[in-house]
Length: 548
Image (cartoon, rainbow, N blue to C red; front, side):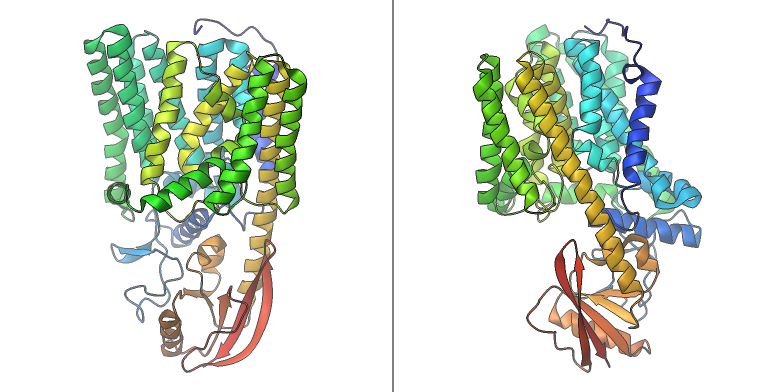
């Protein structure tokens, strides 16, 4: 159906106007977020780096360290996991976003840098449209564009300076191109283009390597099995590898030119850690697939599993024209989401919880070869992602961020599949996806404003230094990193060491930011002078003041 041409004159179903409308929607939503708070600590570290780069007028992604002479190993460096590279301290996992964001930061600060994730989300919406249009025509192609753009996790990631949205655009775009090859279209330009997109994605997102192997591998296997074309399969594989190599090698040259990151080292580190701690990986897989809220795997399996089962049941019943029961099940699923939100806004870590339309994509299998190909890529890649994803961050994230490409593919397939069942499931499931996304936007509003207020308080504190007991906390502050002196000390020994660094630097007061409500920590050579309770997103923190 790829040869159909759009006939609608509606603005939201025309190329440039639709893109501008989606960009305007993102820009308007971004105004409700505070530029002093972010979706996660990785974003805050990038913002801190951008601020330092701009202040120093350098293309190198550096952070610096005020106490480097006294702590040359960076034991209590404020930014957790900052590492010494080429004579400076960095915390950068990928360079393209920072280098593209640098001129935008200089022109308009953080808000203008959001043009990059917004462009990525728009690109992902276009890739979804391309795939859905191939499967079901232009009308559903546009529906997929708007659902992926505004009623899926990508609407959240479009409003945060992170590589997720551009990365998904690259991976989903590659799948759309390879789906055309599976359908029998000429492979040369499409396979090469898919490889380029996957290479670009790999410079930003480590999981792109998984989607590269799965997407190209399944495309080649499909060509061999269904079309009996070993030559074409080999052609696709070679062209994809050549296309992938271009951006990857260019990124390596960029790293060599400006320094400050080791993308290949990060990839090999993730690969080396794969399949270890299988019990923990299994639990985090359940959380990032099903959870309505951060918590244990058992909680995710119960609440998230029940909710997903209700939505799946509603889709099946509506397909059988049992509309009344379908409405009841959808109402129950919506009620569970509502009960969760009424308990307080927060992260929705589960892929299926944050993107209910993806459940339709899982259940309603496409009939075409290209649709089955896209479904196989989405489903096959996810367990591999779980086997290699970084552990420890399953709860505080939105929609299973390492599997966002799978989410986007399944949402696209869900839009197509739901059009073949009754209106109850189609409207209900897409509407539920929109409501979950709205709760995420409200959470982003609360989170960004709350962290901004807290760091404003901390910057104005009279103590010489703020010492955080949570290693990730200062990363939340973004540009506040440059506005005062910070240290991070996780262990008791590190806290004593931090006090000695402060004393040797000629300073005599500091405050310790702690989450423990029981008692102020004892610090060698320092006297406690007072305690202040502060809050961030409703969580109490304790600021203990000391004098050496």
